[in-house]
Amino acid sequence: MWNALRKVQGATDIELNEKGIAYARLTGEALAQVSFDLAFSSPLKRAVDTARYVLNGREVPLYTDKRIQEISFGIMEGTQIDGPFKREFDYFFHDTKKYTAPEGGESIEDVCRRTRDFWEELTGTERFQNATILIATHGCAGRALLQSVYKDGDFWHGCVPPNCCVNIVEVKNGEARLLAEDKIYYKNR
Image 1: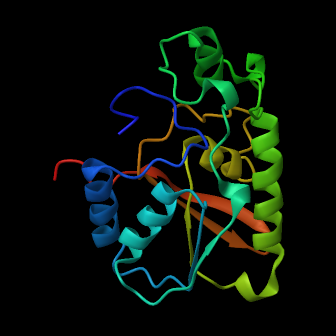
Image 2: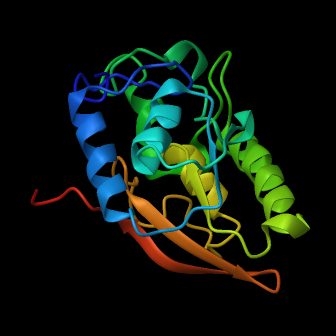
Image 3: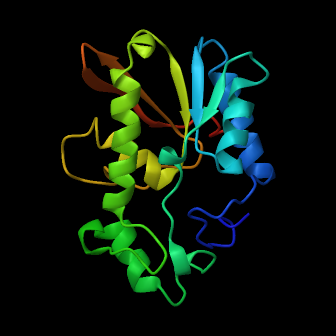
């Protein structure tokens, strides 16, 4: 709901609205033939629910991990993007090197550090080496997680990812390769 109101959610635990539920269900239908071995989600309700809708009742273990939770905007959470912190949000979305952590919030570097820790643990764990894993996270945390795959230094990699988009990464012999980026399964439906 806050997306529709152009309010910043960050680490605030907002539920999916009807549109978000529809997107997650359609994404789940598109991924119905993918045999997930396990799933990880941010502990925020909107991510957990997205994972559950995508899995659509399949018996796949679902674990939450705070390291892939969305960035905390501290005192800026709940404000409108074009409100009193407009300049800070302009930096966040368009010039990330100038963005600094607000009071009570995180920097992009903070999010990159914790998602990198998650990535290294996940890709370095023997039992996950041949697993197909669903990860449900958020826009900034997702891009931070993909910094382990991207090598171009562009944090947003061209754009803020659309809601409920899918990125497919293959990891073999310690090397990660992006197979699909920001794929949307709910468009034109």
